[in-house]
Image (tube, rainbow, N blue to C red; front, top):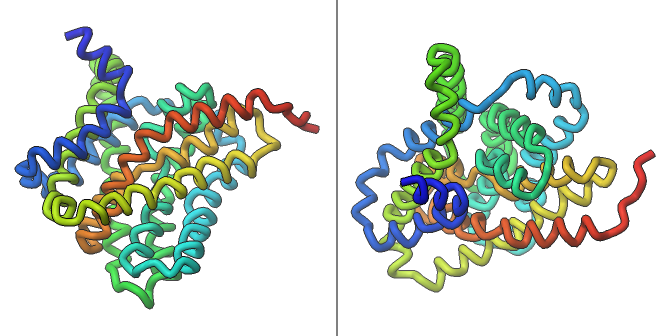
Length: 312
């Protein structure tokens, strides 16, 4: 059992990626579609359980840095992706999908990936929390301003869904933490295993829901996978090079929290408010997501070897 736990902890990205092939092998998992929101809320509950407000308070003093990170992640980069998509004249469903994909908050796993990349994990955790809190406002606004002539969606319900997804787990996790003080550390020690298993189940269910389309249109499915890769590289490069004034650890946090976004929230929103094809684009984008750790490590190693400018 111990060896299984160690394997899961050391191979999180790989295990999460297995959700796609498992969903295609076992399409019966599509019966779990009504519980996708609950699965995601569970992941966020266990993530927020690790939250230490005293650590967040230390980082929250860096107001300018946090404002910069949030505006870049939730507004500027989504608009850049939207404008590039418009220039390339992509189909409407792709335009909608790519905007949603680029506008979701930082992924809950990005703190762990920041740690692997030797970045500032406390800063990453703070960005994760803040982007999750603000995303229920920015996503509907971006959709209204940029897409109201392309697609009609229920902006209020998108906000309500996001608030439910994020704030209920946040509040419940803190109540649990202070009610079960002895049990909480034991759960936190197994947190990575628990969240990995739930994310695997989420990925399997989402792939199973899209089984028919993928099997009938394998070339188009491959196109959707390849389409997300340059966007991930954009998310990796832009935040890093726009923050040369920061220490290396903080620059790593800046790009890790944007590169490793919470694609699952986008999938759940797409399944709830958009068509199945839009959800498929985001579903398949999870495959490159789990592989981006490798180019990220190479990218960091190259930049660490490069001469660093002295901060004044």
